[in-house]
Image 1 (cartoon, rainbow, N blue to C red):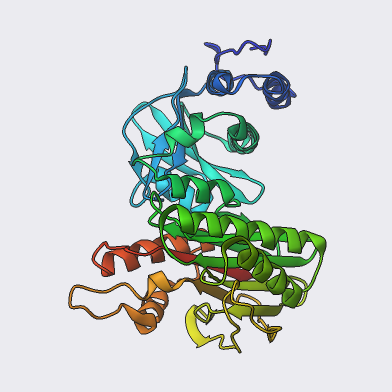
Image 2: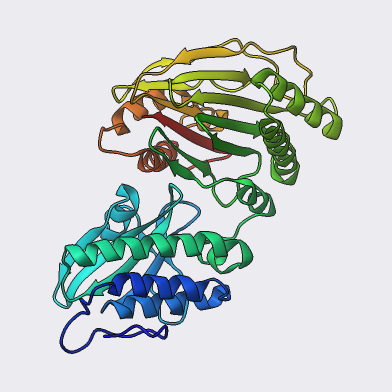
Length: 404
């Protein structure tokens, strides 16, 4: 079999095993994608799958509620109903970040996580007659290239955003999702993951992070109110935080900058609770400023060992004094869970607040050594929502940091 840039199938004699075949196929895919219109990405991927003898390719993307994997439509790609993340081979590949192979009567169905830049876009599924180590190596490289194509091209098309929606989305939520960094990131020394509820109606909650050299910067915020007013305040707060972070100023100065931005734009009766953190990923030294937020939880040995209590300052916008910078040195494997008050202040059926004690209890139940941060945050959020009777009358956000 030869690769001429137009796609080719597996010959009757079997798969191509000539030297350099995989490099030529991936090189062709990369070369053709550089100036390709986004709608032509699916057929290009389908051709690449056919080039290695694959059949029935499907691109499955995580929906905003993190409940299902939805099919990206496009010529050459298989369609179908959303696939639940829980209890399916595709969902297992997505949550574990590792390929899953399922033997079937027509061959082997392979589910490949689409990992790019430490984040995961979804899953590439395809069927092969059989799979050997050479196929696995090539498939892993193909999935990485597909992930990069989706990441780089999704910003100039609405195809991916539309496919990921299983419900109508409010304007406020549209604004919030456009602000967010990738929901997860994995690096050798640190991993993070976050989730927002209600995914299609969120307004005032948001988070942001950046890994600059050895330092992880994190902010979680909760703007007062609901709807567009809260989304607008959250936009200003995140914008001010990013501006201060990129200017290289300290945590206390960052708080002051955000405080002025909210006060000047919205006046004295508006505020945003916030928590800003810096983690030195080389040493485990964690510093943070708490501006009216619930105290984060320190998870060690897969149980909550303490609340990271600190001297709190006023929410940004209220003109608080220079904040106290709290500090703790983490141990390798420690996790820090940040959350907004909507998670614990929801009323249960009997009228009682859900509360932090129940949150801690469920963290201890869900935490396991084989569960990564992305799967942990997703599972915890959905379990907590179920325990609250499926209600989320206020925004509820989780953000988890793991120091490795």
